[in-house]
Length: 258
Picture 1 (spheres, rainbow, N blue to C red):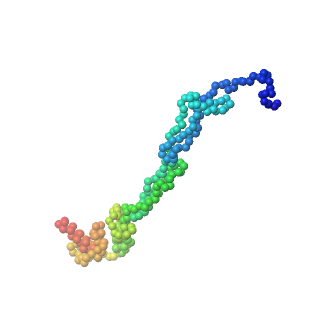
Picture 2 (spheres, rainbow, N blue to C red; picture 1 turned 45 degrees about the vertical axis):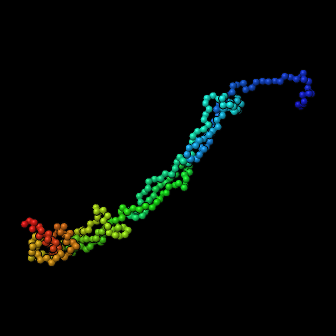
Picture 3 (cartoon, helix red, strand yellow; picture 1 turned 90 degrees about the vertical axis):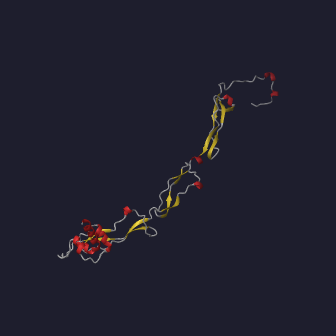
């Protein structure tokens, strides 16, 4: 069939146009919201925007944009506050460690981490993880020399050594060492029992010796004050070696008793 101009047809024979209703069901109006956009700022407070429109839903599934007054209820917000994620989290640093040296210059360290979930912390603002430090709290320590030979070739004797408080770096003497940690200066020693025969004419009483023994002076001046402090003057062998110190000790005792 070919469509031609209306003039070729008789007007009186033209049929009436046919009209029939469609989409007879009531239109459904509702709000449609879009996704929130990105925050207006990357740091600190800003806002986000989204599209909100009123539409009606046709039976064929089409959505027709219409005026807001047709939709029921309040219009959903198109703006909301936000905060840039780059500012919400920052660098976090742990406490400083102790100085690596307790006498002089050293280094102290700490852990620095980025707490941003995306790892977007500004490297220019990263706190330092290491810095120089200086500590002089333990510069002095006890130093000891070698033990001397035993003061006696047989029987009981004493050994001594040098004990000094010295600076770790400069080696200078000082007084800042802890007294409770001071090593001993003397220690007893023993080389077995003496085989010497006892002379019956030897003065064996320190009390009598203090008055009658001909003393030529202390033979072991380094040890005599220790022998006196440890009450070894009552041993005649020690008395003869430290007669001056021991005689003075017993003479004072005799004088005090009298």
